[in-house]
Amino acid sequence: MSAWDALAADYDRTRGGEERGDQYAADLDDRLPPGPGPVLEVGVGTGVVALGLRQRGRRVVGIDLSAPMLARGRARLGPCLVRGDACRLPFAVRSFPAAVSVWVIHTIDSPQDLLAEVTRVLRPGGRYLIATTQRPGPEDQLGAIMAELFLRLDVVKPRKHGPEPIAPRVAGWAHEAGLRTTVETIEREWVNTPGDEMAAITGRMFPALRELDEDAFAHVTGPTLEALARLPPGPITRRGLGEIITVETP
Image (cartoon, rainbow, N blue to C red):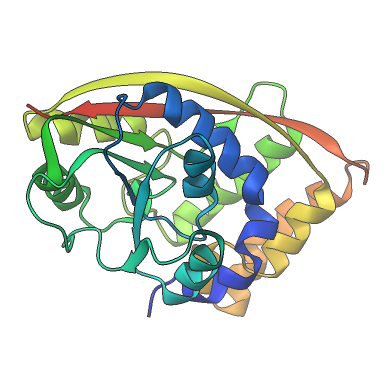
């Protein structure tokens, strides 16, 4: 069972849904090579990014390990999505001219295996675009409060690949595999409320929170919930920073 299975029903509502997916699709489309060849999305999830790419004329094939997430993705995109392991891709050598992953590589136990597999299925001169998770911009007070939550969580349950930013580590893994990389910073702007984040926390919409017992959960989340409760309750314009890493195959 994938850690994401239990999150599928609420994933789009708590992660920005099709609007967020379209924003990422726009950034990825600008960096993808031209041509009719299919784009492989590794970690396609509920299909919101793939939908945005399709609406820009891209043909997309998606893969994900979580059946509940894929069920929602197939409702959007039809049978172009398959279930499978990102580190054992069920595709032939040199099947795709390009691949993308959004908010995925930090969840993979062995990113080196992921890079090797994507490289295997890309054609010579292919391109793999990796979008990392966001971090709060300098004026994002709500984001700073959430970032402190994850720092406390790291003490109790360290992240697989260490704290953010992950982009330098991704570039390092790619260089170890003999791949060229380019790292670009992107900005995101969206609106949510302190109540949205409080609901995501109490609903354990972050996989690592689901693994905590009640005492650890209260210790990690208590200061965050208190800080969020002190903010004005209305909508807040958020600004975040992330990276798109372009990995090019020989």
